Amino acid sequence: MMENYDMDVVLGTVAPVGFEDFADPQWLQTLKQLGCTTAQVYRNHDPKGSANTSNITLQQVQDYLTAAELPCDSLHGIYGHDLDVSSPDESRRNTTVDKFKSEGEFVLQLGGKIVVVHCSDIHKDGVAADERALRISQLRKTIEQLAAFGKSIGVRYAFENLPGYHPVGNDVAELAGLLREVNSPAAGMCFDVAHANLTGDPITAISDAGETMIYIHACDNHGTVDEHLVPMLGNIDWHAVAAGISQQNYRGVIMLEAFAQLDELKKLADMGWAEKLSEFLTTAQPKFS
Image (cartoon, rainbow, N blue to C red; front, side, top):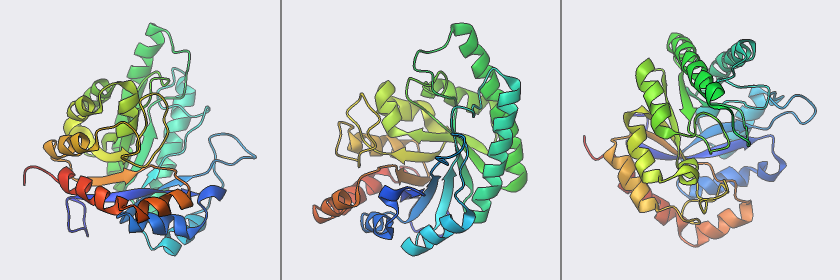
């Protein structure tokens, strides 16, 4: 159970730092009005540097969260073309693992204890079967290494299920199988409801993920594009999602990874979306004590 909360499952929000569209503290404050009580930090990449770097400082993140009076529970790990935890290139994979070790140390400074990890880079044309098999082996090695490191410093690494244009990580059952093989308390799945909707049936995927879920991303889409809509604005059956989460006895954060503009969020607040999200959260509470 998460500490310092009255419920087993709580609603969180993404906290995008370094983005002009979300710089206004009212953005996070409005998400608080919708019921969010904690935040996952998501930093902008450095537009003048490599795609896998960020010049966002610890102080910038802390100032942003302080302005909204929200605690940090986790960090979305940095990613980009040069970073790939399942790369067939061992040197590139090792470099990526080292960066994620640094991300683990960074999240502790923010007061969080989870780092979300993308399982692979984007390959829109796919990869050959032999490369994919190698990537699965490489991913398993990364899970083992980050789990060992995470256990040593008190951080958990949450490997995220991804859309189909990622060569590995797009199959929830396969990813869950790797996590069960490694079987470490410091490694689990960040289950992304919207990504599961892009690759199949999210309700089945929740069952496939099962006890490996240690974090949940929640946003909506219409089944074709990763739109990052506020839940109940796309075609996902959120009552069924909540019931599925409850059945798995999940305890933790369900984080709204929705990148709506401030005006839209305010309209949704006026339309009673806080009540809708509260009903969703109540249904998602663990079925068994």
